[in-house]
Amino acid sequence: MPYAESTPPERGKGRLVAVLAVLLLLTLGGAGAFWYLGRDGSTPAGGTGAPASPATDPTGQASEAAAPVATTPAPASSTDPRFVTAGQCVRNEGAADKPKLAITECGAKTYQVLRRIDGETSGRKDAEAKCAKVDGYTDWYFFDSKLDALDFVLCLKRR
Image (cartoon, rainbow, N blue to C red):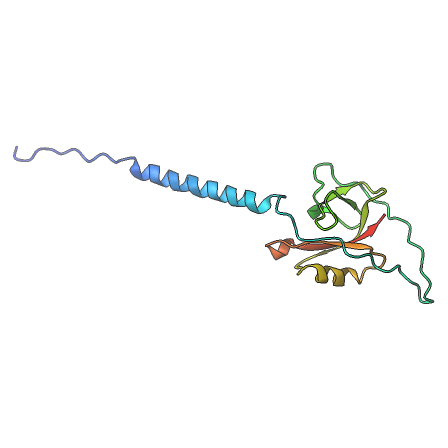
């Protein structure tokens, strides 16, 4: 026998371990990015604007405020203002210059959402301009995200 039978080389587990390590790193990186971008700690830029002048009728006389709109309470699972709709109420749990809104039942010291305007916002002046078209608003709030599709402006009425 001039030639000895050779056994086929054993396949190492090195490639499998390398592929699994890369997949694990990608998964952890994606989860970390999701957590970082989705956390509430990234305080949205926003604020309550200066109170608007009271609404006036065509004769120049100040009109009385309309009766509050009946609302349904926000779902108990979320008080995040990103999910508020027109007619619901929010309260400010932050400072006047750094508001942190939370959905709540309507009552004293709350703000009723008269209108929600979804879409890109550029900040304070944009929010003031958008809410200027809403009758009876007293304050505004805007959320300016890195993703413009998540931006919104809330036109509010102090209760």
